[in-house]
Image (cartoon, rainbow, N blue to C red; front, top):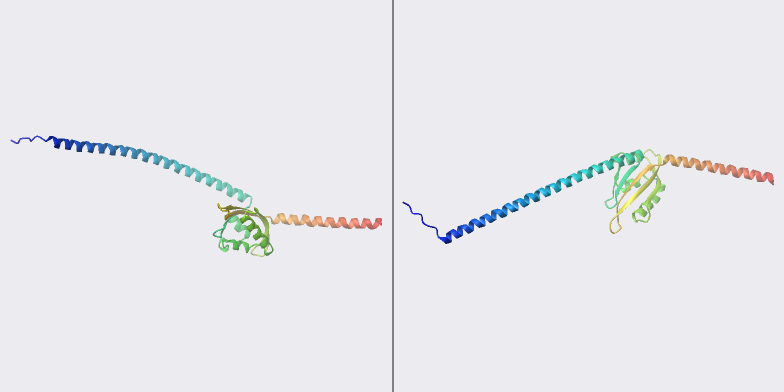
Length: 212
């Protein structure tokens, strides 16, 4: 028969201590695991909320962009955006229609636009641009452009400049729209007015001659 050898107290204490330490470690791990699960759940909820807000914002921006496109289309406005630093100029479809050029025919930089401005209006247009870029005055100008077939079109332009913290111009965004018909009517009214003034002067001169 085998005799069971009694365990020494020191060994028992050592094993109990190891067991207790392992048990404490287990409890600590379970506690950390529970904390991590809660933290993950909170972060997941936060991410889901943020994603929902981003989707809602994107949808809001999309609806706003659609409304803006409808408004500009209804008003026949051409929209342009010029990155002043990189000198990249972007035109929308209406701008291309106004200038009667295909997308591949437009260079996409400032000089490409200036070349289409009527030669007699270029200096005035450049001065208006520079005044806007320095913040001296808002970009608000009327000018003529030369179309590919030689016709001349009158345009009205308005723009806003975005500056950095140091006051340096970063980009410029604006609109163009056709005022050729308005200019034609104004010229007709001016000619008619001048003609009436001539008639008045002639009649006045005749009356003066009779009186004398």
